[in-house]
Length: 150
Ligand SMILES: Nc1ncnc2c1ncn2[C@@H]1O[C@H](COP(=O)(O)OP(=O)(O)O)[C@@H](O)[C@H]1O
Ligand SMILES: [Mg+2]
Image (cartoon, rainbow, N blue to C red; front, side, top):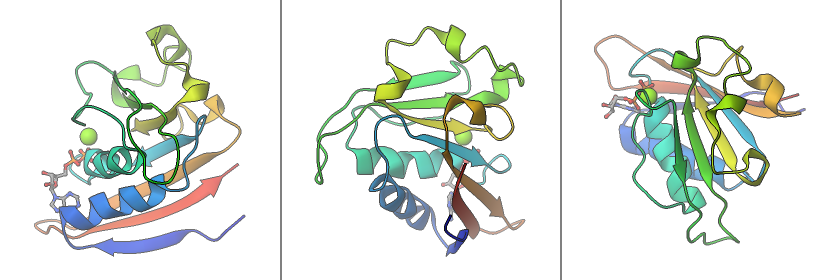
């Protein structure tokens, strides 16, 4: 297993660029678990992942609907896969509830990105990409630490 990687992200564009980079390694069935406080950039990173995957639709916070599905679109480096963007904050740690969402998208055929997913959704896949985002008070600078776990 590779060492955790770390990057300083001075602007939101840097966070989105990291998302596009991470997307290059993501395939159908992959799970991405995003951790970090409100405003740390989880949704911004997801926007970059969506751009890299080439999926359809605008990424926004799924807070009030729990999960948002983005259909496959165009991807430069191969066939696009759908993206399922979940906010686990509202799942309240209930492990069964993600299955109960009754999504149209088969999770094994999609990349699944889960905000607030740490400790809640890891069991859904054999391994997952864990990204921890942190922020300094009164600053745009974010830090990302990421690694494949499992
Ligand atoms: N370096 C940065 N990376 C990500 N977001 C940043 C950065 N600097 C400023 N921001 C701003 O911080 C906010 C991050 O929000 P969001 O991605 O929704 O966070 P989260 O989903 O973790 O709550 C956005 O308003 C974004 O424009
Ligand atoms: Mg968010």
